[in-house]
Amino acid sequence: MGEYKIAVVAGDGIGPEITAEALKVLEVVGEKFGHKFIFDEVYAGGAAIDKFGEALPEESLNKCKCSDAVLLGAVGGPKWDNMEGSKRPERALLGIRENLGLYVNLRPAIMHKALADACPLKKEITGDSFDIMVVRELTGGIYFGERGYREGKYGNEAFDVETYSEYEIERIARFAFDAAMKRNKNLTSVDKANVLESSRLWRKIVNNVAEEYPEVTLTHMYVDNAAMQLVRNPRQFDVIVTSNMFGDILSDEASQITGSIGMLPSASMGKANPGMYEPIHGSAPDIAGENKANPIATILSVAMMMRYSFSLTKEAEAIEAAVTKVLDKGLRTPDIMSEGMTLVGTKEMGDAICAEF
Ligand code: NAD
View (tube, helix red, strand yellow):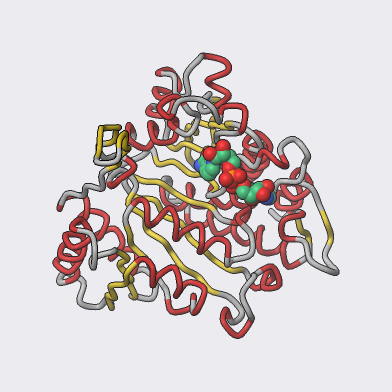
């Protein structure tokens, strides 16, 4: 029995549709396991720009800070594409991450057996399934570094600086080694140490932390090779730890080879609650409002919230099992549809998952 306050940022595009399904699942979980989930509606992203003139109003940030966890749909869309960088909807995400101190982004890339046909790779490469956990550093590196314009050798130029401190590398490395200890004890650290000074420091600190985890097998891999190995032999990976920008790119690649971007959840965490839980995909403006979006990534994000923020393991497992059962029964949203399966919309997929409890 517990009471949990969840700040719900539905956001833009398909955001409101997919979060609505995740909240339905939370209601059912609450009833079944005797918890009370209190939802607090929060405006951020394009919806907040339209209503309040800024992507992350102070009130929204405060609501997130006062919650036990944040659930986010997605933000952004063509309507706001021409805005100046610092005012765009996506800045809301960076603002929440920074203000809540969310330095870890956990992105599982799991290919479900039932969706093997949706995977673009050959069966002999993927086998029946694979299960990779990408641990991405989230509050450092080039996305938060010094930036600007200046007069250069060829006229006006722009720059963004990649910076990592020993402290930042050590805390993300420790998180990744701990994660590997709970899985198959295999950690791949991805960098570009043959070119970048910040990567050479990254490698040195990861090696230092490795001494505390003698049971974990550590491999270093350059990011270009990692991008290739993910499509060549994804089953070699267990846990991958990497910087903010490399993690952004590699986790999208890992998601694509699972079959659908609409299936993959993520968790962003700091030292304490609240953490933030969101699907890895964006606001999919091309299908917004059409009842076509796959709500599973958001529903599985709620499962991660149960596990990582509330330590409700049984509840997390029940949500994951409900998703697997519905997939095994052949229900599919358009993005994961294949021959012989039953096509359903966003709402019907949410209802079917709720019905499994
Ligand atoms: P996207 O992830 O929104 O869409 C890429 C493709 O995947 C589209 O064809 C879309 O229809 C499909 N797709 C995505 N989620 C789906 C789902 N749940 N079910 C079925 N299909 C799905 O990426 P994009 O098109 O590059 O970006 C669109 C907007 O979203 C941009 O404004 C971008 O800045 C923003 N964005 C937001 C986040 C976030 O809020 N975390 C992340 C990435 C992009």
